[in-house]
Image (cartoon, rainbow, N blue to C red; front, side):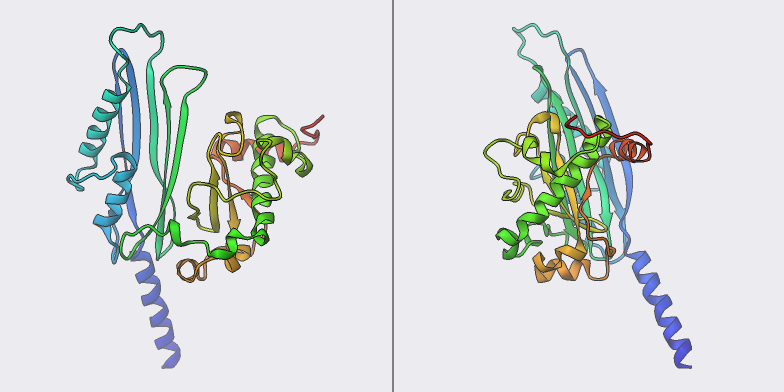
Length: 294
């Protein structure tokens, strides 16, 4: 009888966890005129039991429209309002001649969730002339129970000490190993890390990124934006440090959010787009390799 009760209890718990999944739907909008091109997409929260749906929707919308106070039930209208505002901002001055079209490309994507949190990222690129456009990137890890951001309460004070610095260096090395392997088809050497950051930075004593950390399925994510510690060409330097090695540096709240999740991996992983990861994996299995410094 006890065995049957335990089985029933496990089934009930499994059902609750399944119902707790936040379901989203993809919405997108493309608009273009003679001077401006806009493409925007958004994974928009639809339903989930025991989830603060209005509050999470508000967090998602505010990636695009800070301090938004409108209807949260119409994602298409929200994208339309954003596109109108962006089109107005990107319009060139009437008395100037331009040989380019101002461009905005952006998306809000769901990247991770467990029964207690959900993480969205906003990734955009704006071109208004010059040598290149400017990217912007932001992550939000949100409590499913109340819709509040927890990014600012992930790391404890030990993450601001010298003890944590080697982990940032490990993450930096993981990123450049994948990025150089994918783009330049070469084996990156940790000894060359110093050449990939601005001269005023010591790879053994890096500051935490200006953007707040975020939670993923297997670890804590970090992202240095272009020009923060390195050149534009190096892109967004982002990586994930596994929960297994991050536990001493997490707040009690963060530990509660990730309890029982992640794997036993203890190595930093590059947080790069799918194409870069695929190109890097393809390079790894090649028979011939060369050092990036050669």
